[in-house]
Image 1 (cartoon, rainbow, N blue to C red):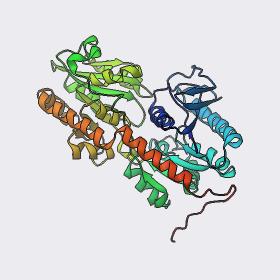
Image 2: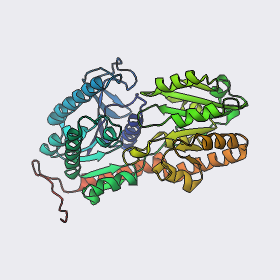
Image 3: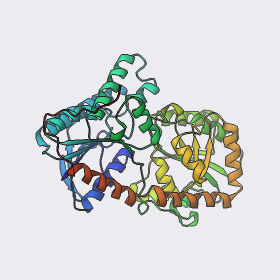
Image 4: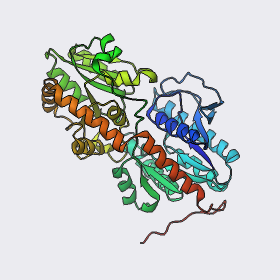
Length: 420
């Protein structure tokens, strides 16, 4: 059995999808599996980087495909990068898939399953859709296809066909799976497997033992942190308004770590308000992830409510691993909010309620024992429900089951009966 992953980014890239795919690919290789990854030759935050076209990394065969290099600065350039990866992946799969290969197709770039489905089908492979972000729904909800609604509906129809003809579709949340079933897709071919974090890679670091916290000057302060992608899917206005309300608080500081589409607008809003209590830092090296996530006392996760069925903020699992409470800003009925409320590992705040947010931060700053208890609970939740080792075992068993099933003859269309 050979498992092939298709995702635009792979180790050493540190984007969310890359970290998930890399961890799973390396784990399967350690178990003795034959694993190949198709990726691009660039990094998500450095379009000018040129990685090796082919290499073996920790037992994984990595094939890096040639693509355009316009980067993330503009939507047309990004679309060109997407299309070039589609074409390269189609070409490689058409030439290299072997009968019985299990091909796990991810969602970066968007709709890549459309390019992969035909060569996998023709060469007798078995396709698994790993839907980390749901497209085109994400683009539609963000208004990016406002001028082309027919294109959005057509893309969704094509995506649904690729799911119908795949062996299995993996969703990270029940909300996403329910949405796809409601669209008429076969429920028995859709399964929920939650994201995870590696409890060994990211671990709690005591404040007094954290060199970054000392180096960044946060001794004696209560730090509210945001770490990761400043993307279109996230909301920052509520947090900025709360920082404004707390700008005179002597002990509360806000730390923003990362980059992305909304970073400049967030920085401009902070400058315009003269918020000396907010500081920005770039993403830290992977080897310092425990220390970086360990600096804040409380971590912010946000998601626009309209995207609850499309996206899960994967940073949430790293926060759990770091043993830190989550301050979720978004739909109180959402996927992250449900875990936070049920497990009492943080606090949920609705978008726009800056006064409640500021009051909550002030109260927590004055109650270190409560913060510590929520952090300990967070780590326990990670180890019980979202640990990497458990996820690896589940994935390994699932892929083996798919490989052992009777192969579909090349050129045979798989149809699922659905009652009218």
